[in-house]
Image (cartoon, rainbow, N blue to C red):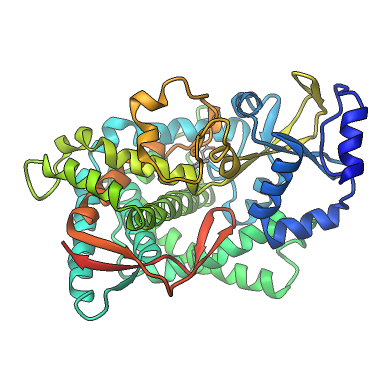
Length: 459
Ligand code: HEM
């Protein structure tokens, strides 16, 4: 380490030179990444700064928490920048869905899906979100009479899953939610393994992990193909994203989307469209449970609402609620890192990054960077007021990514979260529970394992 420091001092910054640990072998690096990724990356940033070269001789990997460079990487288009190897490894699971595809196919699919996620379309989902929320409130009301301890992560996951399949595919999945969620859980662990392994065996090799994942894919596919065939059989019955996909025709070939491609999109949206929102909400509830001052601010906001049940016109007045969600995403960004690979050389300040370099853009660290966030460990939703947000670097905060490949569901996530937070916080008091520990696992998303448990009581 000392030698390395000296190296950085005595060796002038040539365009190619970026500080970083020279003494790590790639294997040691991967071991550290698997053992305690957040701890390891935090140490690397503290030790070497905001752009760190990770030790991969053939294909350099850079850890990036410098907002100017983050902007440069994320705003680059596919021409000179593509999603990193980790995403390509997810293709056996997600195929050519929006998250993993690229090029013309991605562009066409994104264009088709965009209108469904526009503000106007989202407002049309108010009733569904609220209805599902009130159902949960009723259920919890009954349950806490005998057991006030609630695994809020599980509840949020179930709730956001039910909402996303209702609004995107018009399906009520209460009865099958458990099967789907079980399969998705297996796939999430498997996806993490694929994302971070040095090398992987093709899915055709019958390793225990591959067999388990294959079974989960089969279970999930059975349900997804059922949804697709139901939509194909009754095209007039549905007016949702899936029916838009079914109506779409490729301009050149004149053909519609295949069932396989439809399956990839449906699976991607089911996966990307619920767990992230659920995770953020769970952390938000826990942060509120530990910060009574913020709950008081919420109560003031709710006291000004005209009725006990929310209406669409209340949402613009729930600014503090929205800021709570933003601040929870700052401290615990569900998508905690984004990977990109340069497909041509990138010149930036003193540095030149060769084509083929991988960048890990780490929200978790950037969102806690003391240069941009005073007292970064403190939960303070006020940071996101219009006043305090003025002048902040636009890439000091990027929970939904940025540029062409930014999250398609960001407005939907914020909309849903506002309704869920306000409805639950108006009904329940939430307290932290000491003897229900959990571990933060940075899988593909920032999972709290085995979930966050809170003590709920009626207000
Ligand atoms: C708090 C909630 C959410 C967070 C933090 C989040 C975060 C992200 C991030 C960081 C990306 C960019 C990944 C990259 O650049 O490599 C992304 C992409 C994506 N997200 Fe979200 N997301 C959330 C909610 C949602 C919802 C509700 C949906 C859908 C209903 C959704 C669907 C997608 C899709 C399809 C992509 C890929 C977009 C593309 O490449 O065109 N997400 N999300």
